[in-house]
Image 1 (cartoon, rainbow, N blue to C red):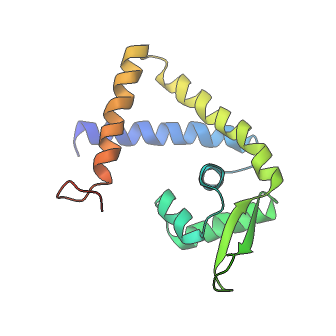
Image 2: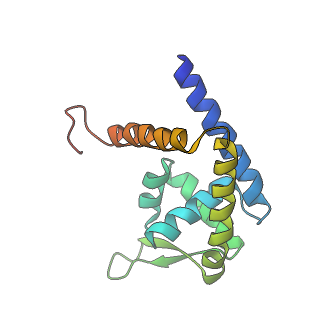
Length: 145
């Protein structure tokens, strides 16, 4: 492993742990909060689409959705006009009301973690990470898949 690999992993793991601890104060796990964010930002979605957006299996999304349903933060519904077996996930009113607190907790933990950096360094980091993420979504030929 390279130094960059180790630093990226450590940074991601540390930030994820800090955010998970904060959102746990609101009664959800970090993974549950991630699914809620996908639904908050993108609207109702099929479990397969949510899994793709999160980079996890459909089974993982199903388990997260079941936990969030038990907390009355997410509902499953049939897809309109589609196959009756096809379902969509959506935030409940309570889930939508909880999102500002979850998003604020994530933003506060990110800011705290990046506080050793100057404003210019944070902007540079954001630009570099943006390039890395954009490159990940391209095919080897450099065109979008």
